[in-house]
Image 1 (tube, rainbow, N blue to C red):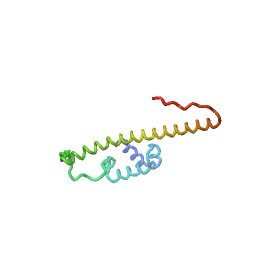
Image 2 (cartoon, helix red, strand yellow):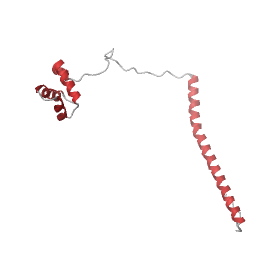
Image 3 (cartoon, rainbow, N blue to C red):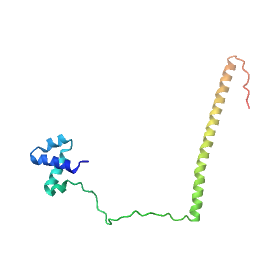
Length: 135
């Protein structure tokens, strides 16, 4: 943020005869910004360099934030809220069931592949014992 004193010093250099561009480059600011400061200084004087708030002025200068208090829930709204909370808990149960089903399907695939390998080995002449189930 440029201070009022610094803005005035840059404007004074331009009014003393230095070029807009050379002063802007030496200060490290945009040429257009310095031009605006010089124009405002010529029109309004020193007060033209003061930053003004932008935007629409409020209709009521003393606007207070309103605190909104929620209305109490009706019986039907309370029941609906309870039902929705229960449903959101059921979604996680559904995901657990899906995961278990995927695991069982994968286990069945592995069992099928294992049986196919044993069958192929027996056909080639290997003598293999039937797999035993561990419980």
